[in-house]
Length: 202
Image (cartoon, rainbow, N blue to C red; front, top):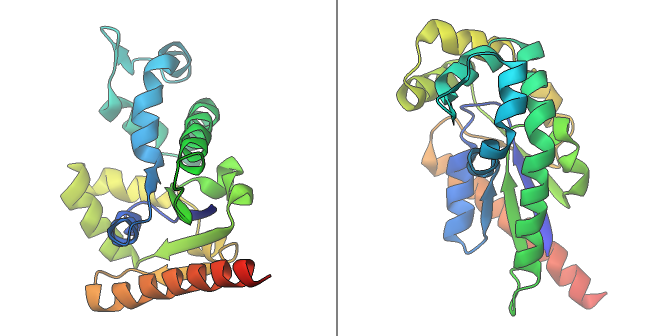
């Protein structure tokens, strides 16, 4: 079973690419969803690193996002706490898929920090999704309910596009034009099929 890593900046539109791949029968593991599931076991560490984010025994995700994503240092601190737990769960899910009676030919792991966490080395194919800054900002304003000032600060703390594109096997530009996005996803699927065919013939 091939492991496809799907990465890129926040707001780049990775979820749109993941949805199209899912529609083609390729299972998707969303690292954001996994993270929400595992953070409950990390409350003491999160509170120690970001005082005030745990209230009444519950994680205040908005407070955590404000403190962690406002700077590169804060993001790195959060990642150091959460990445090991997230990656353990991702690996567990990948093993379960591979052990199925009829395992899928590939599985997608969708995460913004696949490279930083070291998981990119685990991937058979790394795909970077990019989008213009103003497109990403518009998506985040519609999705996150944060102020433009806060989102721009969060975006400024992220790495440049080249960090992703130079390490990727394939780059998909997602400016929001579905007519352009679908062919790019089809190209990815064709690449997977070609690799699988070559493996079977080898």
